[in-house]
Image 1 (tube, rainbow, N blue to C red):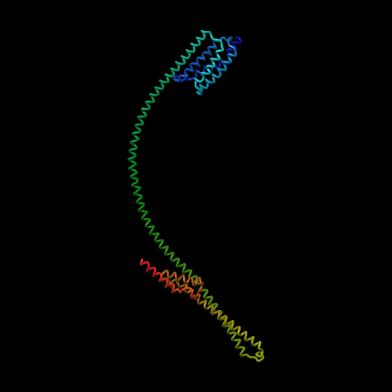
Image 2: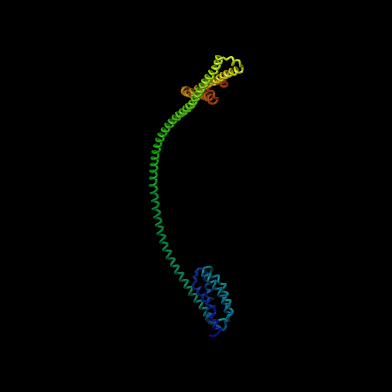
Length: 393
């Protein structure tokens, strides 16, 4: 085989032509898309032209430059066809690149007329075959779609009938359920209302019983509180009275001790004076200083006895006052028990103020406050005036 024949037959251009043929044969074009169908016819005719050029061109007349120019256009052309196969583009978009293939073939020497016409006839036959195949496919798809449509229509009719029957059944079930539920709800509400009323009556009775019990308990607690208050007051008064009684006893003991001491000291002083009178010594009595000393000692003893006697009298007064306070604290409660409450409070306040505030155990020591009798009379007059004013209104 010659040099020019080898380089023509082995050129990569023909691989691109075969790849374009395989891509076109694998495409599925919708016959209703006129633009895509016209582009398919044009691309198929160019592929037929390239195949005819490969088979019928004289390799001696085609240079490597001519082959390279067509190869470059064919490579770009195949890339666009790959995008169409991937549904990233449409076939009508590669018409311009197909024109580039034809332009690059214009530099090749023309084919013999007989061979050119044979190529055109081959292109027409290929297009007719592809169109017939596409029409057959479309017809089969139309028939299949018609069968599927009829089947779907039958299914739709069955579903419509089933839906209508189900709708009727659901409507009847809802009506029956509404009637039954209304009766059940009414009966349940009546039963609940009856049970609630019974529980309410029982609760009311129990509440009344509990109220009576609580009121009785409160009355008992009030009585216990009053009793406890009186007990506390009595206990406090008894305790304080006991303290005053102890104080009175202590003062009595002190008073008696002072009385006894005054009697002893006074007797000693009087005895000393008598002894001095009955045992006179002319020499001792002639000493005036000694006589004055003896007289002073005797008078001093009598003064001490007088002081002790005075202290004893003071202790006796305090003991009597403490004893009277003791008796008052122990008996003031029973003594004023029958008096009105406001008078009892007034007496207790007067007694408390006198004994515990001012410390006057032995009766009032000043006339700055009115007497207790005067306070009680004033209070009674005020209450009578208030009662009269209330009755007039």
